Image 1 (cartoon, one colour):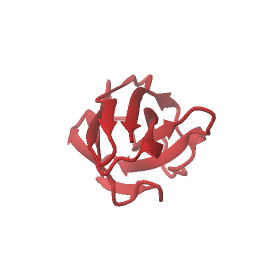
Image 2 (cartoon, helix red, strand yellow):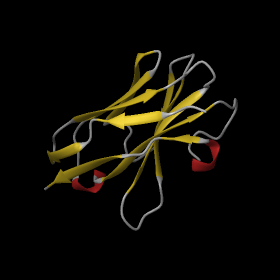
Image 3 (cartoon, one colour):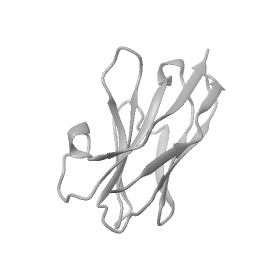
Image 4 (spheres, helix red, strand yellow):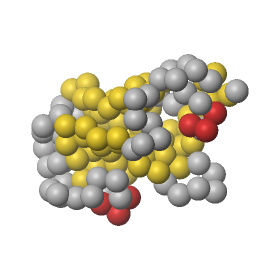
Length: 123
């Protein structure tokens, strides 16, 4: 069982930046880590993922060019969020999978989830 803990959320003005962190209790067994978000009344949305051992990233269309996923160390995933918009307001979740060859943009691919961190972007 892998525990994930997100941090770094908060309130920011439109155009500003935030950096989210996700610390995993263990990454040895993981192939992928990812970020999703969920706004009230909406489905959970894929933001991006990283193939952990290879440092290969992929992104969802809504954040491509604005959000950047990286590894801080062997247990920590970061997401730098720039040029934030009010529509980026949501609870942000990190997720992880020990299974190779998953569909990285599907919530059902990830058995491990963090508790979420709130990001609010004011206009």
